[in-house]
Amino acid sequence: AQAGEVSPIEALRAENDGDLAGIDLQNARRETADARLELARLLGQREPLFGRAEGALTEEATPPDPATVVDSLAALPDVSRWDAETRRLESSLLLARRSPWPDLTFTGGVRRYTTTGEKAYLAGVALPLPLFDRNRGAVVEASALLDQGRLEREAEEQRLLSAAAAARRALEQAGEETRALRESVLPKAEEVFAALTEGYQRGKFSLLDLLEARRSMAAARLKYVDALVRLNVAKADMDRLTAADAEPDSGVDP
Image 1 (cartoon, rainbow, N blue to C red):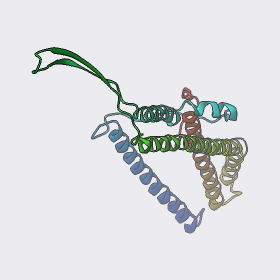
Image 2 (spheres, rainbow, N blue to C red; image 1 turned 180 degrees about the vertical axis):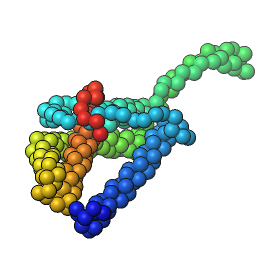
Image 3 (cartoon, helix red, strand yellow; image 1 turned 45 degrees about the vertical axis):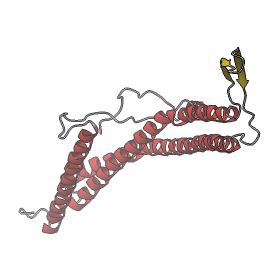
């Protein structure tokens, strides 16, 4: 701009882009600091005692077979805990049904008759008959709680099935988006930027054209990273629902 090769407006536009990028950088640093503090609290630390968190984002993820997902849900703690609760409620119902039948009571002793001076040995058996109190209230309550437990287990299964279906859809959509960005959008944006850079150096294009091409390439890269994040989050949700082990890091650095 000082040499008169580009207009001051174009230079101002470039400086403005740089200022906006600096603001985004500061926001990202603050978000990183907040995330470190939150992770430290989860680890029981007042301040982060760990170094830099590093990892790789998976670029490809194949959705599991629906039948495999359904079979895996039964092994999750979300469902298995209801199996244990159902067994407990069944035991409570059985106990309530047996409660009306009292235990036998045996008695024994010696009796001395004062008139004759003789002694007699006594033995007795007592069995109360539950003619009026058959513990029906407790049986009805235990039966209702058992039915409620079974219904809650079914509701939990349906919730997990819905969550698995949602995670599968998110995994498929994020996978399609990442493939399209990686195989088509990003290469084209980089090719356009490279061509405009060469043309700008030869004086065929203006600085604004070059800045716009760079902005489009940066936006495509950011969109690709966002798609990778959604892909990995969906994969983590699916792995949890299918009780799958996490795969080793084998992807692109975030």
